[in-house]
Image 1 (cartoon, rainbow, N blue to C red):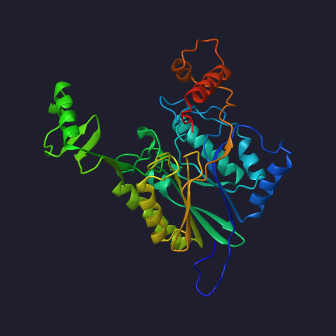
Image 2 (image 1 turned 90 degrees about the vertical axis):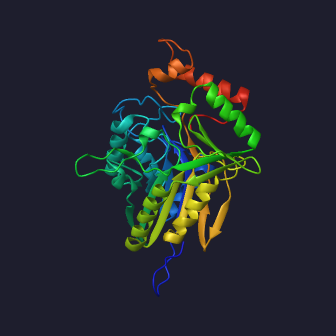
Length: 358
């Protein structure tokens, strides 16, 4: 990437990867192809990855709802990431709160101790949304990390003078509208009345209906429209603008499982978000979470990576799991994590559905 510096040309190399669900050591791998990738990351000024796990000795407590599997990694993985050449980590994703706020805070402490720059979580929304800064020989780099995929209770909240803020991640919410034919919305309205839900909604327009939290609108063709949440967009853009004044380069990270017409197409709201970030001063937008490679767009001479897929995928190496996941798969007290993973793998390969634990 080239700095926007007045009268001075600077080039900074960024090695960006997607999701790292790391639970084991990397430094024991001596395969030539693997080491060539490590060499590439180490050669860059900035090595970026999405840390899609929590890092601690089972601090906090398992949340009632997880990102799929309750991700927790030994503290030594922080040093393993450094060994591989990573120095910039995004922490906002659907596994951020797998071990509640205790696990989130413990992860940040371990990353700080290891000297790894990270962003996307905090004791309140201001802290979760603020840029993290890293100084390199080529200048100062800022990172803003957000996620559009998360449990509703996991998003950070603002503090007020009289009430403390809510710990969590930096959210990028979106609003979904389902456009359907007239006869479809009439059928849904009838169902709404039959279930006795109509009294829960007032002021509905003739061409609109909200049913079970979903908004339906009469349209010429059936389609789904996803719009970025205005408040979250504005809040993240403020961070980008701040970072562009404080750093030589600004990287925005977005964890998003949402899709467009198929799994290889980004949702429309993330395209809007990415371009708005570039307009506000970002030099690169890096997305992950879809577990597939998506396209790259060059917008105003700046790259938007719509999904960098997986980089490290070790989610089947967890040594401990909470009771919730054993109940999910009908396993008793004598079952082990390997029993859980056997069932997860069997169901995945038999149904060919996308994995649920990313």
